[in-house]
Image (cartoon, rainbow, N blue to C red; front, top):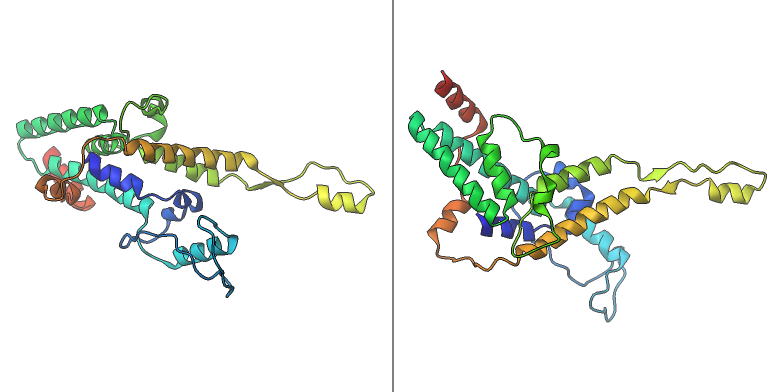
Length: 257
């Protein structure tokens, strides 16, 4: 699970955190985007392009291509993975009819959660706990100090739900603020100083969240264990099988009755 969450985290592009399109984009096949040098947007040509130069027109062209692409991106992949683990845990519990076996199964998931906490895999830990809980987890009650980045002794994978929630709330803030300048007789001065002011606080919050995610991507690379391509266990954990939401609710009501 930790290796899978690591791969999902590293697939996230910082631009996805800025545009917030992952809240409404349709799901599809994941496609890795690569930076390629070529013609500028608008028909212009680049002669002898310098490596690392990222022109504004090139950026506009890439944004337009990504906006038209309906494939699954890194953030969507992380959200779908989180939901899949939640559904899997809930499915395993409700499919166990014996109350004794069901109690042992929940104990097993609790021990797994402790192991994920030891490995600092908060994403899988929260997903597993969410699958056991009958109600939704309150993000505001999560202890953010458990995901500190000041003392990175090894690998660490955060619970992205905290940062995605902060980004959604931050996008609701206005990008511009009304100027408090009082008009005078100078027409030129009034035109310039009465313009809306950029809300730098909003952009600072966005930048700080992106910086934390990028730092966690670096910490995720600190895990010493590597993936075995022939490992059956890895393939099983990657393709977790679960019931749909309606089936889980029906089996849950049947167990309670």
